[in-house]
Amino acid sequence: MIKGVIFDLDGVIVHTDEMHYQAWKRIAERIGAEFNREINNRLRGVSRMESLDIILENTSSFSDLDKQRLADEKNAIYRRLLGSLTKNDVGGDVLEALRELRERRVKLAIGSSSKNAGFILKQIELTEYFDAISDGNNITRSKPDPEVFSKAAEYLGLAACECAVVEDAYAGIDAACAGGFYSIGIGDAAGYDRADMRISRITEVLKIV
Ligand code: G6P
Ligand code: MG
Image (tube, rainbow, N blue to C red; front, side, top):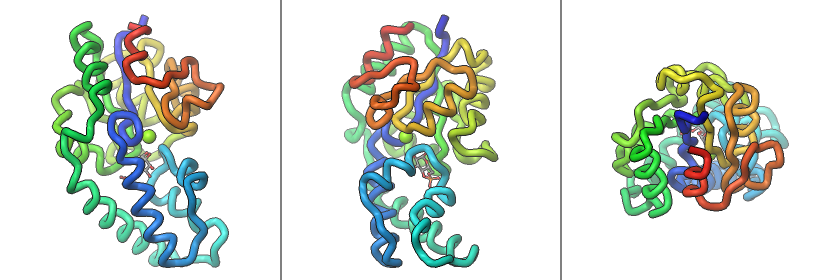
C-alpha cells in the first residue's frame, strides 16, 4: 500500500528544467561545446558537476579549477533565472494533485539532486506542502543511485515499498527501481518502459493511493 509519494522537483513540480537548459546553453556556447535538447535530456536528475562532465565529453580537457568555475558560472546564471520564478509558474494540475494527496493523508516529500531545491520551493511557495525534503545538500551520490529517495523515505518514516517516486528523468526512474520504490514516469520519463507506471498528467498519481 502506498503511504507516501516522493516527487522529483525540476521538470515534475515546476519547469525549472527549461532554466537549467538555458543556463547550460549559455556556458556551452561560450566554450564552443555541442549542446542541444537531446544532450540536455541526459542531464535530468544528474548532479551539477556530472552534468558539466557530460557537456564537456567531446571537448579538450579542462582543469578541475576551470570546471569548478564553469559550474559556478552556470549556477549563477541559473539562480538569476530562478529569481523570476513565482507560484504562478506551478501548473494547476500540480496543485490539485498535491492538495488531494494531502487530503487523503498521503505523506509527501521532495527527492531532488538539486542544491537549489529549498530556494525553488520558497520561490513557488510550496514548501509547506511537503513533510520532508531530500535534495542535493543531503546526499553524496546522485541519481541513478537511490540515496536521495532512500533518505526521503527515511525522513517520512516509511519503507521504500510504501512509497511511490514521480520522475521525469531516466536516471530518476533507475534510482527509484534500484531503491525498491514504485516508479512513475512523467514528461521525458513517460517514454521509459522501466517505469512501473507512465503518466501524462500528474493528477494520474491519485490512481495509486
Ligand atoms: C536536478 C536536475 C538536474 C540538475 C541537478 C542539480 O536533478 O534535474 O538537471 O543538474 O538537479 O541541480 P543544481 O540546482 O544543484 O545545479
Ligand atoms: Mg527532474
